[in-house]
Amino acid sequence: MKKSLPISVCILISLALVLFGLAFGTVKGFGDDKEQVTKLLSGENGLMDVLSYRGADGHNLCVVASRHLTDDPDVAVLSQNAAILTDATQPLESKKAANDQLDTAVQAVKAKLLESESFLQSQRDQQYLAMLEGDLKNLTSTDKVSLYNQAAQGFNDQLTKGVPGWIASVLGVKPCELYQ
Image (spheres, helix red, strand yellow):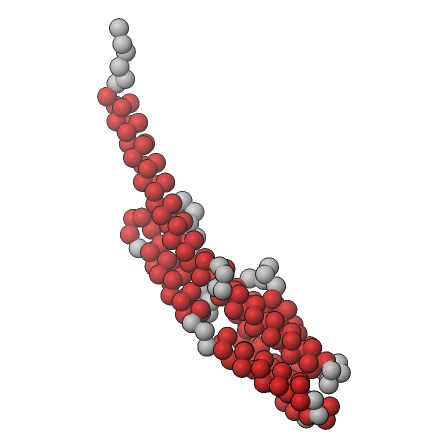
């Protein structure tokens, strides 16, 4: 003779399976959404790449400046900001601060280069400076920042609204960091 489980145990097992399915599906769905946002940040030609390209241009300007300026503090500031932007281990907040300071540092170095006789005699370095400035301006005007921030804010809004967002938060899904 077959023994059957009491109805209360069957209900508990069913309830546990439903809760597990709900939790798993919610976390998986939010994980997939966060992965899409993360691709805008860290994916190929994402925001981190744009910041890294700006840092590389800052380093290139430091090379040009080192040919004409010796132990200049503005070049050192430019170099520090460029190093932060090209360092993949730096947090987004540090990169934002370095990126904000980069343009000021570039203008300070440019002003000193334009006062340098050796720079004014080097047509090649003048053209390189103009090219770097154009590249930095193009990278500044990219829509990567707004695309990432919109996607991250949308994800964060989903995480704070409704039962699925609450479940995901309780189960450890973290909001995306904004670039601001």
